[in-house]
Length: 233
Image: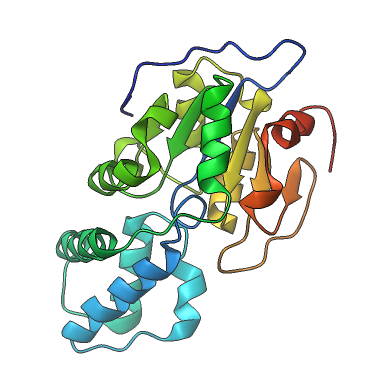
């Protein structure tokens, strides 16, 4: 867990039970879930293997160890997990160096959270090297804390990343709003006891207790997130 800017503390607006907002990165704030699949496809093609498109829902949103391990086993490729992880990270860095589109509503939401001094963390299954590159586009000033997938003992779908982020911000997980785009991330946030806003990017996600599903971040603002603390949607 690495803090990229001085912590904003846990002060919230008067009357609000919201203590912090924890945001996923790939597919939630930046439109990169497709980038990962493209890179995986290209890397395995260079190894002489074709990926089945039905595998995409298996690898999306998860830690690289799980995704890469699954693809090695599924294809029988002669490569180690460590070697493949380097190739995938290298390919992804090259891809985002050419283009890094933000999801609709992401920039506006981050600006609003910063303007109201809401403690905000970026919580991703991506490795630190990738997060630091993406932060240049998102704006590191928007985050009091960032948690990378290679900095926690267990990453998503385990609750560890969100528990670490809440603890780092001095917040109660039950009073944190998490924004996620995959079932893996939603499972991690819910296991940590957080309220979840799901913005599905690849596969559908159904509403549930303490889980609100929206079509786009354009539907999400600070008033909406504060409302999660007092309403079951």
